[in-house]
Image (cartoon, rainbow, N blue to C red; front, side, top):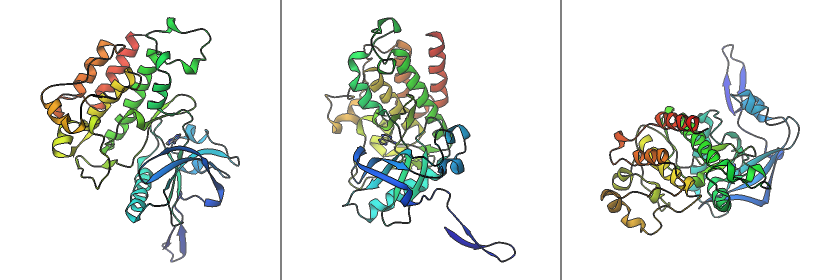
Length: 324
Ligand code: ADE
């Protein structure tokens, strides 16, 4: 909170509306939802007055959570061995998410705890977890059309082509939002898409996200998503919304292969030569021609030849219309 004086000189305290009281938060360390190099995400319960009523830009989102009951949340916290750089990174991610604003296809911030030594980032809980795991789990269920649906299959466990296309559209919608705000995500991949209990796809993990037209990226020992990176990102460490477009094309490949690892026979160090020689991922068996054409355009060598996320979203919408 910040101390300041109003025009009459009275002392006022301005509270950060995102700052949660840690005593209302219960973190379930037995339910780990994900983990990275310096932080893990656990399931949690946030009790009491609904912070989203105050924070929500969109009232429909606020209504998802109830006042005075235990709200399911996901909490990102540092590992015990995390250092001050890691702590600064998590504080940066929190600060970044505060500026993001609400969007239905982005994993939204619920609040944070930064008054303790170790900061906590609290976001929406997405019951179905990450899309890559879900795709791999349901490989056998993928069917090209509704007719192939087995009668006993619970509807939520059958991923028909239409659901895959719907995920593709929702993710492009989230990325239209990010790119319109000049945010470069830099780690667009199926593992960073989460699915809610209503099977809504949301972009997550803003640890690498930057606000800029172009971001130059050098790592301090961090892992780079080499096989999702555009040629100019591999060569010059140059990231723009068009490098996110390239990564989105690789995400479509993951989607239509039900979670195959891209370029599985190519060494990461050979990737830029491989791509510069004109090689690209092959059309997956179940991938419609229209969608493969779109993927190929996302992998144009020159960034300006790639479509924008608006164009991508429009193309998928048009394809969903004709294939319904
Ligand atoms: N894994 C990482 N973040 C998550 C979230 N918000 N909900 C569910 N699983 C997650």
